[in-house]
Image (cartoon, rainbow over all chains, first blue to last red; front, top):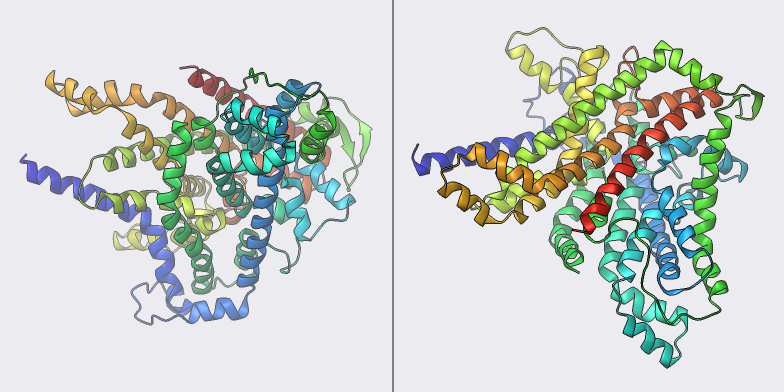
Length: 271
Length: 312
C-alpha cells in the first residue's frame, strides 16, 4: 500500500464514521422539512421541502414555552448551586467547627445515592409541601449538590495559605474573603460547575415528569414527551421539527463553547 | 451523561482529609452554620431522609398514597426475588448495561483512535465526533424513534431495498432491546469520545516511535502501548457509563415504555411502574433499595480508583 492510498483510506473511514454520527441529526432535520403525508408514505426523497413544520410547531404546540421553562429552571438551579456549593466548600476549607470531617464525609457519601432510587419519598415530600406543578419543584431539591461542594472544596484548597493570613491581618471577614478572593480565584472551577449543573438540570426527565402537569411549567424534555404522546397519528414532520428546535441551541453552545471549555478544563487539570 | 467525570477526575480526587491547618478563628461555629446550613438542609431533606424513608417503606405494605400500613419485614424483597417479572427486569437491565457499556467503549475508542492523528481538517471531524454531547435524552429518542419506525424508518427502507421483511423494531422484544441500546450508545458517544481522545493525546509519542523501531505492528502497538497507557481513563469511562446505564429512564420511556412484553423494562422503569402506575410503594421501595445498592457499589469502586490516581 502506498502512503497516499493509506491516507485516502483513512479519510474515507473518518468520513464514514462522521456520517454515522451525524446520521440521526441529518435524518431528523431532513424529515422536519418534509410534509408528514410524504413521510408516512415513506417518500423520503420528496422535494416538497418547506419550513411549514416549524411554523406549525411554534404555532400549534407549546415548544417555545417549554424552552423558556427549561431556561428559567436551569439558570436558577445553576446560580443556586454556584452560590450554595461554594459557601459549603468554603466552610470545609476555611472554617473550623466541630465535626468538620464527619460532615464532609456525610456529604461525600450522598454522592453514591442515585436520585432515581429516592423519587418515592421525594415525591411525597414535595406533594406534602404543596410544590407540585411549579418551577419550585424542579429547583428546590437541586439548590445544592454534593458533587459541587466536593469539587469546589478541592479547588479552594489550592488557594495559598498566605492569602488567607494576609486577609486575616487586614481584618477581612469570612464573607469578604469568600466574595473577593475565593470566588475569583476559583473561577475556572466555578465555570465548570456552572456548565455541569446547567446541563444536568436541562436534561432532567423523570423528576419533572412526575411533578409537573401543565405546559405552563413543563420543561423541554417532558414537553417533547408530551408532543410525542399527543401526536397519535404520528405527525413525524412536526415532531422532528420540535426536536431540531430543541437541539440547535445546545449544539451551537457546544460548538462555540468547546474551545473555551477545553481550555478551562486543561487549566483546571494543570493546577 | 455528565461532565462530572472530567472535573472529578482532573481537578479533584478522592475522599481525602484536609490536612492543612489554618490559623483558624475560634468562633467559626455560627459562620459555619450560616455557610453550610442551606446545603445541609437541602441534602438532608432530599437525599438523606428519602434514603432512610425508602429503606423503611421497603419493609411495609403501603396504601395507595404511599403510607405504610402493615409491617412485612423482608417480604417485599423475597417476593421480588421470587417474581419472574422482576428477575426478567434484572436480566433486561444486565443485557442493556453490558451492551451499552461494551459498545460505547469500543466505538468511543475507535473514534478517538481515528481522530488522534493530525490530518488536514481533523478539527472538523473531532467536533462532529463530540456532537452528541449536545443532545438531550428526548431529542435522541425522537430522532431514533423515526429511524426505527416501521416501513418509513431508515432501517426498514434499507431493508426494503434488499427485499428483507419489515422489522417491527420497537414492538418486537429482541429488536426493541437492540434499538434502545443503539440509541443510548449514540447518545453516549460524544462524551466518551472526548474523554478517551484526551487520554490518547497524553500518550507520549516517543513510546510509539520506540515500538516502531523495534518493528511492532500497529495492532501490537495498540494492544501493548495504547491500551495500558490509557487504562485508567478506560476504567473510569466504563464506570461512568455503567452507572449511567443503570439509571437509564428517559430513552426507555419515550421509545418503548418498557415494552414490548417487558423486554426493555429496566430497573428504574420498574420502580416507576410499581410506584407511580401501580401504587405499590412498598414493593417499589424495595426495588429502589436494590438499585441504590448496585449504584453505590459502583460509585465506591470509582472513588477507590480516583483515590489511587491522585496519589500517583
